[in-house]
Length: 350
Image (cartoon, rainbow, N blue to C red; front, side, top):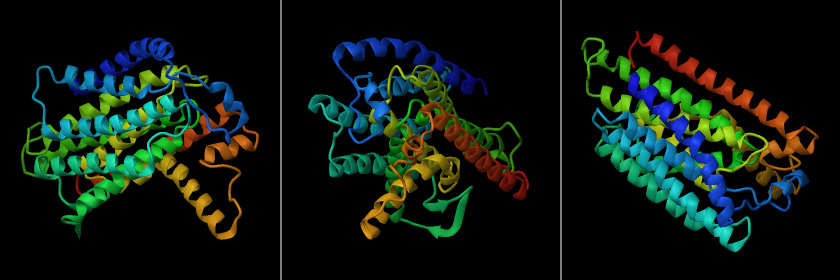
């Protein structure tokens, strides 16, 4: 438990103290945010706000992980999850840098971004299956027997990584909305991975407190999640409305990839749909809008992602953010409730 607390505290301090430095540097370098011209008019005043704050988030979680592992061994599971976040962060950073260089709100083209996400996803899947003993079954709260994908598992991992990273990216449209929601989901995965570490021994018939086959990797994953949670919380201090800095695609793609990696490594893949319910809602609104317009030439919402719809209805930005945080919290509470209910139904084993 102590390494988890150390990781969370280190990540929090690293981001809390490092973000003001990043704000000054990014402003001096001209790393300002580009704003959608067709977005709500109130957002135009945010033009030029320092972006690429995801660098601070990633740096904070990396420092937190290694600080918590000074006296204990690393595991391939923890390193694979961390590498997935860093890899997606690099893809996002390239996207952000192109936007800054071109002075437009368009960065990498769709194909290049998909290729980058695919490379990270396949690399992570190989590490998860061959070095961390993750099954190739589809999982909800635990692997679903009879749904083994085999080679198709690598495609499934890509779908999860791409969907999750793009979902967080879509949600990152209001000050602190994506970062605040991500903190809640990361907190859930701290609980889930620690819970798995604490109760895995019972599967092997070992005594509580032992270090069975899955215990150390699960604990290491909990440390990664805790470090990321602390880092995002520290960044949120400066990213909350009115934001002094934005995470950019660097942060949103990294956080989305991290959530997918945590779900895969803890074998709670479909549970992520519930825990990340707000991200699913944002993505679904975009899909519905595009589908409806192509079929009927009419829009379902005034603007998507859906948080902009409520802004155009007259809701103040801060009201939208807080109410969406509430939705994110309810989704996390429901997901954790399902996880615990399944734990009890299985007789107290994971």
